[in-house]
Image (cartoon, rainbow, N blue to C red):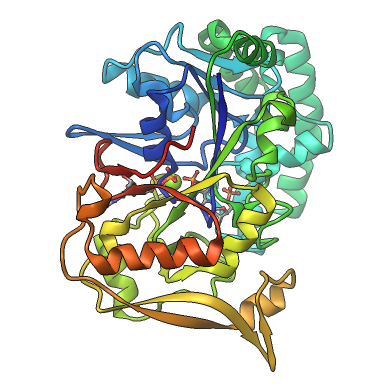
Length: 425
Ligand code: GDP
Ligand code: IMO
Ligand code: MG
């Protein structure tokens, strides 16, 4: 038996989906514990590509149980669409998918409010209603999955929330009001379709752990998007770090064995917010093009930059990674010189720790060490020894500076384009 948490170490899109899919082979359960359909986790198997938003990336493996834990915010319409898309591709969902009764539901008014708030103060969100839904959760106004099973409770909650939301939409935002009856009948329809998946998932997960099963907790987004430890306010609205797995699934920290950080060989970010190592010239465009760095959820071009060891040191500290996986090494093939950020300069100070102040992050200059690149292709390499010498030196440099073991190196999109240096489980 073992449990492992998979966490994005940067600003999301590190390739978590690919690594989760790969490691699912060794696990019995895959559990999402935070975020919602703002996530886009890509898995490529053979010539088929799947993008998972809410359903754990383990679902492609037959007979593995997939759980959407209580910490996830669920848009039932988006979930049903995802279920249908997967079923069309012959993926087995019924009997393999369980959703916590305590998941909060994204309601149409969350999306309507976010549409307005993004106009006033742009975070560059995915506009999936994530922030407003978590706001309602914390304010104790949320509608939960369990409420779908009790139409009267559902109806009362929708009415009470719409009283306030419609006032805001009309008077503050000059926008169209939403109709209570329409939302209620839509959500009652969702209830009919989803009720077979709704379960006491905390009990399921703990029973599985107690009976010796292996559990993989699949993080969404990344450490620097964490609501507490990220680049606030340019973050998502959940705890994306490893600790979130405990609260978002109902599992004791004592039951977490391993924590694997997923690190892209360079850095990307979608949306607004500081990004010290961003490359703003043609090389950034080349990496975006070669790396296919366009949002898996929104299609937006991702901002690209050099690897940032200061951000990663912060990620290691707040997550306690027991190992890391380096992904997309192949995308650096053919780049003459590779820069790696080893410090920040702000005014006359040299910073070695990720600053808490947004002002500093926005205005610091990254300090780089330069490493020679490689011309050979690393695409699809499965044996560490076959990597070009300079690629090995790049990896060794990262490992030495971060003082954490690189356990996995990913060299392509496909499941088997991977080097396992040591088992992370
Ligand atoms: P996630 O959100 O962390 O799961 O990552 P995304 O799926 O949003 O973005 C990662 C993208 O990189 C996807 O298109 C993956 O198929 C792709 N990818 C993952 N690992 C590798 C790799 O090692 N090499 C290449 N070339 N692509 C990869
Ligand atoms: P995965 O799981 C990258 C970003 C958005 C925006 C900020 C807030 O695929 O790595 P939100 O809609 O969550 O309120 O947006 O967070 N963001 C992501 N960026 N990958 C993701 O997920 C993201 N989910 C949210 O772009 O900057
Ligand atoms: Mg993604």
